[in-house]
Length: 463
Image 1 (cartoon, rainbow, N blue to C red):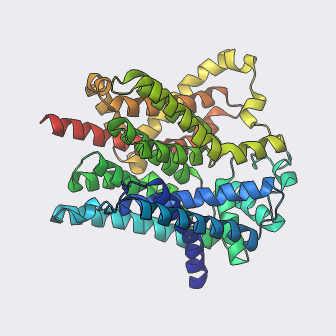
Image 2 (image 1 turned 180 degrees about the vertical axis):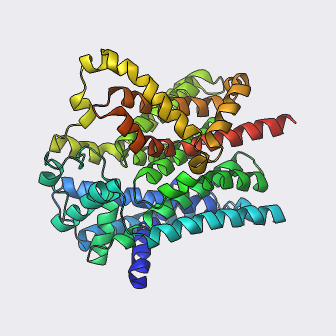
């Protein structure tokens, strides 16, 4: 069993090596630190595997170790050659040093880092010891991965089988594809080996978050404190152990927004490119990711249109490039989805009569009840939502006058979209809220904690 665990980890690390070369090519000015490249390499690695498998499916090639590894090895050689050639033609520039190495470690820093390590250790332990047992982990993501492995490709007949009600054929396939990739290289199905994906995603989320805070000029202690706030949220840690896709989409969307926010503050085009790639990968992960792509795009457009420091014609060109990059990431999935003619359950059942009927309006009472039940659920969320509400009420004007307005816009848009689903759902609204709302909140938890950190930074700079 231990060998299987280690092989699963190595199989997931391999595409990260390729992604590291890709990042080195993008970061020709050597802006990123090693601490920033590590989570990016892992996240891009998963995205590259899913993207490659979708392209192979469209080309009619079978999923096998040979077909999976050959393009990855070829891309690795190409990225290495491009990087080495560029390195010879550019003046030598030292690698950016990680902020972790620049400052003296205080006792508080060590205490916070220990706390972060314990929370992550708990996530790894729980994820790797428990089998896949949660409903969607078994009947949706896990079953799709097994079907892909057994069919040596994406089985259209299985995905479009309407008798299998929980399959959701229109759901993006990043997670099932990555899980099946592990199965293919292992040579058999092993649910324990693929569970590395989830605590590693949480680790990548926390690391990218901390690195982003350091880019925002927070000192080490403050950065570690907010990273600990993020990783100590019980429901976020739980989502990294139950084999659902929610921790993945929270990480992709969160990291994509972190780099978009850094671009708004610092105007480094590398950050905008990283944001577009990560945002596109959120769209490959879950149906909600398509909306989150739109959220980041609206934030970018607002920043370009409202901020005087941006040259507008150049800014709008950047918007078009941003759309082009995340559309390229999404393209194989969109083409494949159109080819299988799958219908979204909610859109298929949606009608004008359903939207305008009185029953839809009356759902507000049930929705508000379940919202307050989550917001006051300290066992799952600590004081996160109460603190967020207090921050919003006491700093509303300051939020609108600072960069925090972009965080508020992204959070409000995401919550508004998720709320609209409960108004139009054809399921019993109470059941739907009970089974899904806590998972949807996970998607923008990193943004809420980023809002706390940004408010603290603004206050510290004024003092």
